[in-house]
Length: 436
Image 1 (cartoon, rainbow, N blue to C red):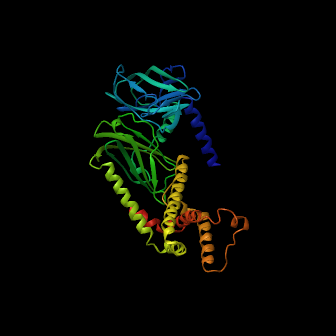
Image 2 (cartoon, helix red, strand yellow):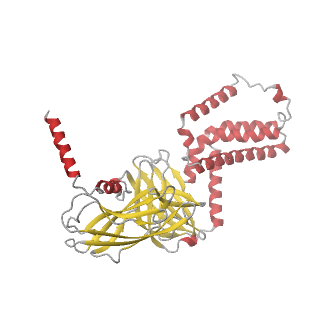
Image 3 (cartoon, rainbow, N blue to C red):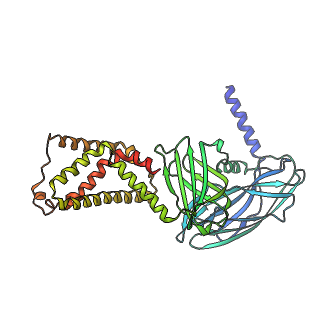
């Protein structure tokens, strides 16, 4: 009974207090596809030297406005408060945006409704504040329409009570990207920048205590860089992410600059700010790079041929050598090599298609799939039993009498495919070490 009475009195209190709530807002600034206004969470400034207001946008369906670095397709909002009284400065926070495409150009921004928190710093908290805010912004759908608004809001000095916008602004503040890494699951987050004769690369490396799941990465710099997809690489447990953005060198015009990186997925919403200094790599020529990667490929091939699990493949090649005449041995090796290279090109195309479909592609990812491991184990077990002579595959007569059944060149080619299947899994850790 006491518990029910307590709930009853609490309900009465909430009802009575809600009657005193009112809205403290500016006029609406109305444009063709949008309207915008200022809202305040408190009735007064609480005698403090800063207050947090909300800049509220309402957009027509399918219309968008832009983030602080929207790419080539738009520009961010611009604020001016020169005609305000008792306002020293205004800082804007940008909510988490989304990526969209307008007229074939990728952009970053918002649609429907969005509230930008404005931290307004006051000269004197004991005096009332008059805010005259002038805004220029852009909205786009199939066409783009510039918008502008002049908003006025009077905020008295003194102790404040919550308005009916209080919880709306609090909800917006709680959903902003986190800026303090100590309050996130990240254990490490770094950005490095390097450039050569043609390309400037921005590399982001992050380690989390949880895992990454199809993260979206957005960059903010002073240069208005285009929106591009980074090259992503993950650790096996998806806890470490390496992302690299490649830009034309002339787009980045300073050797040192401020950069912000926003990382968003189902486990993270983090904004990292730093000053990045470009590491110049002009002394590394493209011919030297080619020689470097050629050496790595050669080293990988040498490692591949001394692994124990490659011996069955080598035995197959040895038997092929003994079966062939000397003049056809070189041809058989050449065609087998072509089969190996073709199989790797096919694998690369499959992974590129997966990457373009926004699927997670990582080193050795297939070996984390139980069904794949079961299929490979079955194929290898069948091959082992066949090699021990416990059974033989009999080729159907239709295949036996076909023109391909006696074509040794096709046999050599598919030997290369088989060598890839047999040799690659066991050599992957060693080749991977050589590459990295």
